[in-house]
Image 1 (cartoon, rainbow, N blue to C red):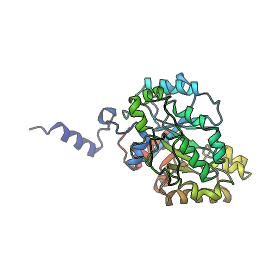
Image 2: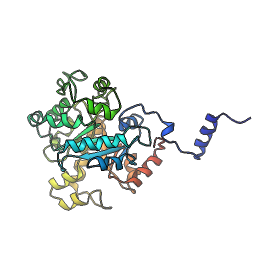
Image 3: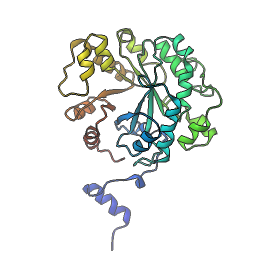
Image 4: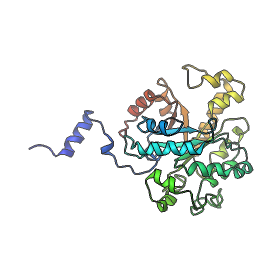
Length: 321
């Protein structure tokens, strides 16, 4: 008598004879990065850019996350909307998610609370495009980061309010487009559009770049702001700020780039503080370093290299495409 189909699949999986595909997964989260991080799996990112044409091309990306640059590129939210719509229309991903997670960097730096408050509209506009997270560049003090997170939250979400955060500043409206990208009703979007894991039901992730000599002394406080879920030491900006312009251009792009002592000290401090605060660490990896990086606890892998992701996924026994 032949074994049941389920038993056959399990047997073949144990033998490594079949691989899982989108048909084998039913996403538990809108945000693919959250789903993986919650399962203890590192995530791998590539870069997002452009509008509809680039969005269609990126829909089948190998990456879990697309880091979309609005810091150095044109601050064009209409183009970002076109990218997100094309990404969703040409989806889903191989894992069954409507889109990869899209995290945006803005030209709004975490210089101080007043600067962030005055420019909170950038955060509102980016989130209204249906993205899944924000990466705060030049996070210089905890007050600025707390204001940034406040601007990304709706007032109805109360976790940590009065305990490091104030009421959210994101107001009613501008939900139609974003909810359509996520594939949820507008009303459900309000329940999901909050920071994870501060809100266990949230689908937004917020990270910080501690990447200059002003922010570094405040590292331990910055990574403990409620709502911060990942941090990085910003190797290129940190290199530039310390006078190592050649390293800034070459880091992550050429093998064997040696970190001068000030850079290594900055990296060690941000990584140690993040781990102590139970915040995920973002760092670069190449083929020769991805396994040691994962073993060292790096959970968000930068660099934009598919071969790095392939090696890392194999190392951690990942099944999700």
